[in-house]
Amino acid sequence: MTVVIFAEKADIPVDAVVRELTARSVPVFRADTSWFPRSLVLEALLDGDGTWTGILATGHRTVDLGAIRSIWSRHPGAFSFAEGMTDVERAYAHREARLGLGGVLASLNVLWVNHPNRSADASYKPLQLAVATRCGLFTAATVITNSLEAARRFATAIPTGVVRKSLGPNTVTEGGALTVAFTHRLTSTDLADLSGVDATATQLQRWVSKVYEARVVCVGERMFTILIRAGSAVSRVDWRADYPSLSYEWVDTPPEIEKGLRAYMTMMGLTYAAVDFAIDADQRWIFLESNSAGQYFWLEANTGAPITHALCDVLAAGAHP
Amino acid sequence: MILKRSWGHRSGPFGWDGFVFRLLSVEPRGAEWPPEVCGDNPLSSASLRYSLSRAVGADGPGPHETRPFGLRFAQRAPAPVRPEVCYCHQRQVAVDDVGRPLIERMGWEEDQKKEWESKTYSDGDEGQEEDTWGWEEEH
Image 1 (cartoon, chains in turn cyan, yellow):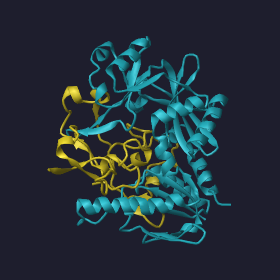
Image 2 (image 1 turned 90 degrees about the horizontal axis):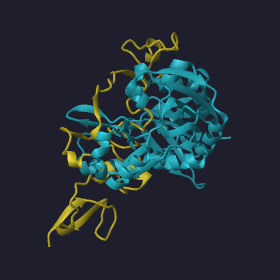
Image 3 (image 1 turned 90 degrees about the vertical axis):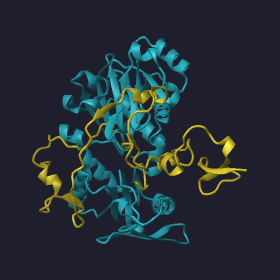
Image 4 (image 1 turned 60 degrees about the vertical axis):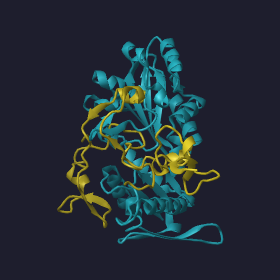
């Protein structure tokens, strides 16, 4: 039984997993979806039991669809089609590829880390916050609005201040340069001019006066909790803004957080998630967001938390009896 | 009657293949992305997972009055460097130009404390905007 991994060629955390699985004598089939259709071949036949049978093959190895025990979908690349295609042909081709290759894979009765559909659903931050609250986790007061008045009302009602956070990826390319919209704590000057709130959905959230933060990496039944301590002013607002200033500590997961996260993972249908918390002076853990494809390797490197090992355990166990 | 093809909802009385032929007079005023960029259904996470596949860039910020509030505070950052690597199909890992796995060259096994460049500005998000969310093609 084989572990299938979809990832880009240059992905060191994936290399670590491949090496460990190989050392355990677990067969691995690694491919990138960018190889489809030119160097990744799908041959799938629907049998009388409603199961897709056949193979997935590169020029170097082949995996029987029925011999897959688990699939790790880790930031795979985009489909790549022949240069001569028109835009129309290309659009048609990638729809068909997505529905054909993606559809066959999604229908396989295997363990996914994570199933693309569950992962996509879980990328909705409003859903994350609602589910986390229902699972007994603390969340910060949040408004999502395109109403200037609603945004102003929310901000002025919270004396400790508010932050603006993106609901999706926080990077754009402008003027040929990468531009990053980190979480921003709004000042009185910002609040005096809220124009742009009505340009699209805008998320404002109560500022959590945190003493430190944590990322809890959930891998199957295991959880690895890494405290993240900010060492600069900007990283105290958004730790992604200043990695060099951070320090890390691997600690036990508080029981109430573990309980809430287990319920969250079940409700979201996730096998893997990196969940971020802010911890205030009263030691309340406030759920910020969940990332179903969140990074973990630098935390493992800095703390020794055996996340790669746990991932291999989950992938090797798979879903088949 | 003047018909103009515009990017709109996937289905409708005149819909075909993701396009809608609308009367010019009722065409929405705002600019819209084609469905292969923004997905077919704006409220569906299923569409979200196929969206944002096209690398989208602009010469610079738009007018203040229409710029999303969240981007007002955006700041420039160095673009992450994606090193050119070779890939060993036999071992299924990235290797350097002499065939040594990068994971060895980068000292992982010798130094567990080594800082790995496995994180990004949007770490934890589902990927940068220019990245793919699923199995889509970059243009």
